[in-house]
Length: 424
Image (cartoon, rainbow, N blue to C red):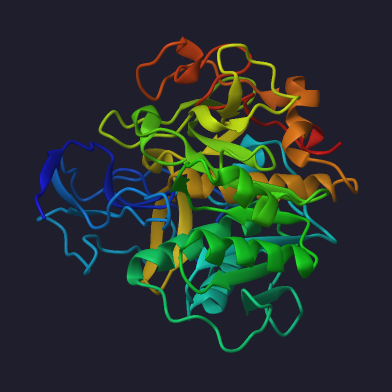
């Protein structure tokens, strides 16, 4: 498979998977020590690599199977693992305290709620990796023994679990579980592992999650949209009174619209670049776009009907995204994964943003019976951080791919500013 040159002055990009980018920081690193880390502080790296080579390990998503779309990067000056980077022994990237600060959230959100995370195949280290992440940041233990963490197949059984995931998928699992932990530390987590990555496989896992009582369902995967999507909506994603969220993709505007992000029964989540700032908020966000083929997705669906609560006039059908959150791997989140990276790494992609938004919904409390939580932000857009800078490509109308005041495709109505926009 051919390799390509890219310039990344701050980070090494290791993988991008169905909404996930993994990076090893060179000039951005985190705090160390026994005390729980709450902040990613800058430190001087041994060196900064200017020119890196990367190769894509998987293709873009198809219409039938969710793809990992992993990018592998090699830096010849660093010792590397099988996946191109040397993992950290201590966290780099944003931790729970950073994300809670950026989005105006409580440090003990999610109490009494259950968040479901949907992924394909089995991650044998999911529970232990989650325990490591939560211990590092001083979060309450979330284990099978204390009833907080449950790992099941798409029939709701703890055994047998699906076949083991490829190494590319392990990082996805850890990212999802760590982010719902960071945003809703007191929520229970239901980890549902689909047998495979097909539409019916993932959809069955969503249905089982709802059957088992989850009111919040995080879906960090995507397919290319098709004319069959309205059927899939009814079969798998239309769950009144449940906040079902899905990422808009990691291949920028030019790739097109993906599913289930385009479903009108799903909150479509775009990605931002989240950076510390001296402004009153303490943070600044722009559209996530690396300008090298990776960036948040957005666009006007060719198939899904426009929901009544979406009022933009340039798209006669369903527009993505609805809201957005941290996704830029260059300013990414800390994740612990022992199945792929064998340690701490920094990650991004809409697979970071999606569980963040699922966690915010959980912080806001259970949706009303019969409601469609995808509509909630539209009822109170002033309770969001409006993202007005950046783009994820070239388009017409401009708001399909360019941030502007009010609604735009890449970031929707904006990012969380507390929980007011996420309940009815």
